Image 1 (tube, rainbow, N blue to C red):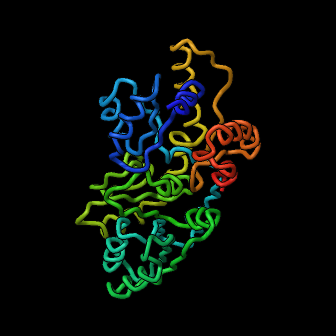
Image 2 (cartoon, one colour):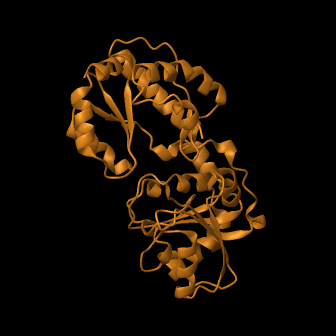
Image 3 (cartoon, rainbow, N blue to C red):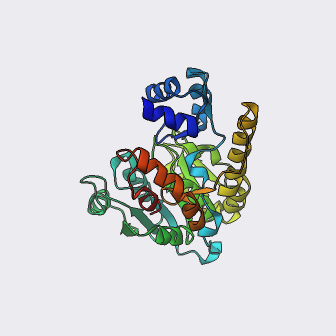
Length: 310
């Protein structure tokens, strides 16, 4: 279409996947319409080679969507001063497998301090989680918080020793990487297909054996004082480190294809959705948003720049 041709001529297209595996048919369609490279930010490092094999003009970024966390947004407490032993940040949907965590709590000391933070998913609400905990017979006192501001989520993450993710399959799970910057030890299932599972190591946390979740959580709690999750994240997956990697990659690609590189890319962040890191960058990009709205009002709304900033 004529409209797409204009976008193809004026922009490089970068797709960010929301799950893994992603829609390969959609990526093939995009590659068939775009004259140059279609860049893909995949949710799982295991997908990189597969995506690049399905079409010669698909190229993966060296980052996942969860790799755009600004380190200054978390103010971690010292381990000895943290209020909560475990935190789980996940919407209340069954895919997050709260029951696995709640059942593991039956085998853990009753005096542990637990906080669950989430949002509703259809008819699944925090009331459902409270009822589930009662039915399972959880003895620990649970603090259950629903739809609180992202700043409050960060405060609770920075006040917890262990961050628990129980999903077996999802996308990049931004909450997992947020937890690293909050200084939490991170616990994910060993059988999970979740992007940040690649970030579990001796410095950051533990992979939970599916048949030994309670035992592994208790061992991680004892060892959590020795983890260095924030330090590791600052070195490997900070938003600034991701910006450097992606900026360098796009610059090299641009020069390789004979296009001038006039300026570096603007640094984004993911909090809790993709936004600009700085409000001044948002204003700098306003003319581009306005032009896209004027040319394609049915695709790009007049309020997109403000709505996407929330």
